[in-house]
Structure formats: structure tokens, C-alpha cells
Image 1: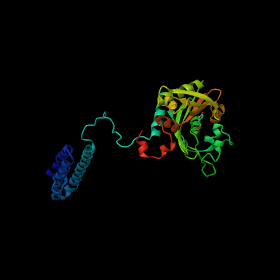
Image 2: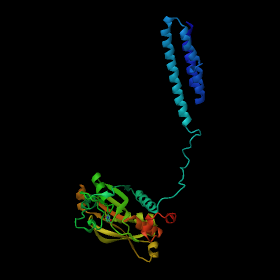
Image 3: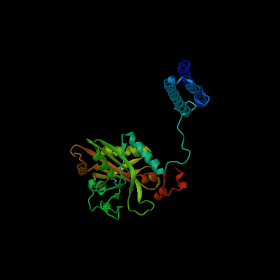
Length: 334
Ligand code: DAH
């Protein structure tokens, strides 16, 4: 029967033409040529009417199956062509440099923080993070800071009016506790972050500023490691003429504790011999007990310093408030 014998070869030709369509426009044309009102396949279906009644069901079924195949091939080819059209026309060179920042630059505090982090990364420190809204346990109790310590006074710290007395962290030392509670030693971290104190803003104070905390816990860690580390980082940051010295001090979470003084040509130029730059010490055994580290096995040191202080020194800035005013005449200089 001529009609039935036509179906298969016509279908194969249609499939071949669809698969060969070079682009979407050509595909739509091919579609019209086969399935449009005057299309070749449409014509075949029209002939169905002229068949004898008993042949119609079998022929109709065959034609429908063929039509479904053609429509599936059409969709398939359209998807492939659309995908190809969405690809870049030029080949991509993955070695070209990334797009440059054409506007603005990093805030000086961000630049200094990045430099400090880079220096510590060189000697194996990882960056850790913690919440700015803290609780008294992580900010004070776990750091052996007793209830009558002035740092806990409502006059000195921002508390949130809520029964659990959450507070804005007064130092990044709270993150020491969080890190030690969440991992086993050895620990070698730094924590850059924002801290808060109830200070009135003046040339050297602001109610919020930034610190970097450091914590190193391992076996047989010494004050010598602490001094060598601090010296390395400050020389990376401020030049090889940097000298540091440790002065005995008191912090409740370290024993012994020190303040770190710093000097270089810049400090001398300011007419000073030394500048106080950080607090530090050997982690107090009580702190290790609070986080579940055995103080007979583990030793460690910690430090904390203010980022603004270092940035002011580095760039010769005499008023801390300049950092927060976002005056572009100031910011453009860095
Ligand atoms: N938390 C202290 C501050 O805000 C700085 C500090 C001192 C951090 C001694 C320490 C440390 O980790 O051991 O002034």
C-alpha cells in the first residue's frame, strides 16, 4: 500500500533534516516544511482520509507515532541549538587577568587588617570568627574575669535589656573560648573583629573599634614563642627596624601577663621611646579547665591588640574618629 510505505522513508528524511539544521532559524524553516499547513508530513496525514475505512486505524497509528518522533527530534535539536547560541562566540582565554576594581578602594582599617592576617598566615595561623553579640560567660566568666571586675560594669559595657543579659563583646578574647570549646589542640588562630566599649569618642577612643586576638595552644609552648611571633608580625607590618619589649601586667586569663611595647623610627619621630600596643600572656590554667583542656598537658599563649592603633601609627593618623567619618578626602589617601 503506497501510503503506508511512504511513512517510514519520509520520517527518516525529516529526522535527518532536523538534525542537520545549522541554526534556530533554519530549524524553524525545516519545521514548517514538514509540519506546517503545507508541510510534507501534513500532506501525508491529509491523505489518510482517502484510505479505505478498514486501513485507516493502522495507518493513523503509524502516522501519529512518526509525527511524535519528528516532534521529539525537533525539540531536541532546538534545545541543542539554544544551548550553543548561549555560549560565548569567541573562545574563552582562561589565563587573562580578572577585571580590575575601577572604583573605590579598601578602607585603611581593612587594608591593615588584611596585612596583619597575611603576616600571621605565613606562619600557619588560621582566621577564626565569633559573634559580636556575646554572653557574659564567653566574654568574662570563662576567661576568669570575676563578677566584680570593672570590665563587667554596666558603665563600661553595652548590655542588651533582656533576661540573659547579652552584651556587645568588649574584646575578641571571647572567641578564644568558643574556638577551644569546639576543637581539640593544637590551636593556632587569629581573630580579627569589632569590639565595643562605653567610651565617649575622642581622638583616641571610640565606642566601637577593632581588635585582633591571637591564640596558640600546643605542648611546651613558651613566652619565647610569643615574643618571636609578635616580633615577626610587627616587622612584616612596620619594617625591619621594629623593636618590641614585654612589660609585666595583669590579665585574669593569662599568667604571666604582659603589655607589649613597640618602637621604630616612626615612634621616635613622634617624640616617644615606646608605644603600648597589645596585651598578652600565657593562657591561665583555669581557662584551660573551663574549656576542657588538661592544663598539665597543654600550654599556650594569647594576645590582643587594637587595629586602629596600628593603622594610626602606620599612616601617621592622630584622630581615631577619622576612620569612621567616611570622608572621601580622608579615605582617598590610602
Ligand atoms: N582582651 C584584652 C583587651 O581587650 C587584650 C588581651 C590581653 C588579649 C591579654 C589577650 C591576652 O588574649 O592574653 O585589652
